[in-house]
Length: 227
Image (cartoon, rainbow, N blue to C red):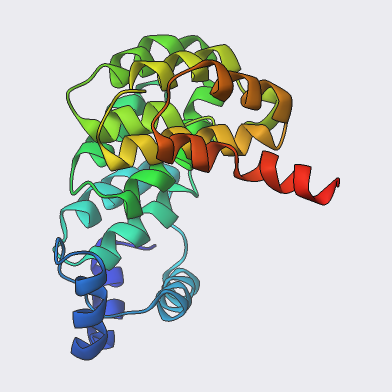
């Protein structure tokens, strides 16, 4: 059965310093990398699963936590892929989500955690949505703010647009790039479901230019195509 050690022993031989330097530079030298590019990483992940077998459901979280503490960034990516195997999350997994979002935080891990892990969690435990995301949207940690804005990214017609609007307005005046971008991204995704509602919201409220520009991309494209 798969363990963290099996993952380490599979990935360590794949180190490539030339690739790592480029990847580290792209990520602003915030994290060290093995230098394993995405296609190679996914292939290695599939092969180690095939060789050792998927971990038992109760073993996934301990392995995810261990990989999250590992030095190189690729291990956090593998941890997220493993976490995605846990289709049914536990009600107390909100603590895990908070830990992952606030540890080694950057967009490359947070966005997947927001739209996949947190999004799945709140679909399964909707009664906890306002309690937890209400805490996150006001939290001093910007990445939890971003997660609260983005967790409905894949909800489409199930989106609670009133909640999304409230969260966008809470940070509408933020100067933080990642929050301005998140607001625009969330609105853009929902505009694929209800473009009129998104356009009306953007027109009626003072949002950062970046948020407006991102939020209206689909609406403007549709308007151009309809001419």
